[in-house]
Length: 541
Image (cartoon, rainbow, N blue to C red):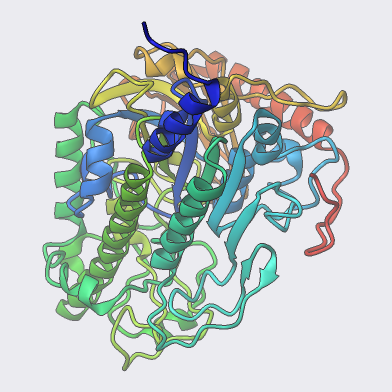
């Protein structure tokens, strides 16, 4: 006959066993964790899993064991995209594009919605939600390493720990922003595992790479030093062919815009940078030998920046594995807009005698290579043609997504993050009575099958560039084209080569009326513009 043991005896024996288990195993049915990884100015086809030649093994592994979306959109610019991700609204609904002002009183950000569901939220990198200037006080994050010195990868002056400005960093300190963001993210995850293991987390890792200036460690640049002497025309065509083979696109290669000048271009730029620069995306063979060498060196730095970002993502993923959180963490990776054609010098200026990519230099990838990074699509950041607004989207969630390496052709937009995360967390948006409904869609049906997300439209408006997508039809106009509308059938012509506005005038007129009605309604919802006051915004906790 077995003697009955006291209950405390079993508890005392069980406790050491529980402490030895991975922290995520303590709750088998726990809510999923979330990580949104956002690149800055990365082109649609830069990553290897989207047709690029840049080495991105960590992103490629996430894609191979997860999903790749082929028709996901951003807003064509940094701060509107970030505002959409955080708020779940189009930027025009919350005074974030244009003009830029304080968020409406009814607007709440993603951490505010997640906190009642038990989540702790962490942020590292770029913030740029100007209507809520402080990530902790205004954004609802529990901890943040906020970086505002986008022109200084090696020596930031304006960077903040939990909204408090940190000391300036000297250029020769060994600091590099991309690595620093990963370090902070890993630190947040370690602290969470040690002190908050019973709660799910949300990590928003917002890199500034590969946004200009082209800054990278010299050993990373050396890896790609002669890789791009073949030129952007060859790279563009090779990427396009690979994307077709992968089944990501079915369109012809977009033509280069040889006469389209980068916005904000100033004539003294060529004097500052030197004769190797090119203002236009001309044929590679038309460049001088000096220009080819200079341009190839710039793309080598861009590639090094993407390569380094991928390696830092790999370190964050390894931390997830180390803490037993990999299986139940939903990882999203995307870019805030297409690659940038901008040519300018600001920050600490440009020393033509310094090593390209070092902190003394200020170079931009420019229109030629931006057209390659955004291949096979048309135009770049700022424009709402496909090259400016199309982003890769990788979704990885071993516990919740059975598919491995599949494509999803569902049309999505960055406004979808709030409803998607809340759907996965088992909650709903906590909206005030005067807040409009969230315009986005949950992407979770697409985790099961392709084509499961239906939507009426996707809306775009940035700096005089306008677009509306309805089904496979897209109406688009650009300021440089005199605001004339163009109409494209994206089912066969996503590279926007054949304008059908004359063949389909009634469709174009109906879509234009729909765009105008949405623009008017979104402005009404936002209310009169109220200027943002950095550091003095009303707390949204």
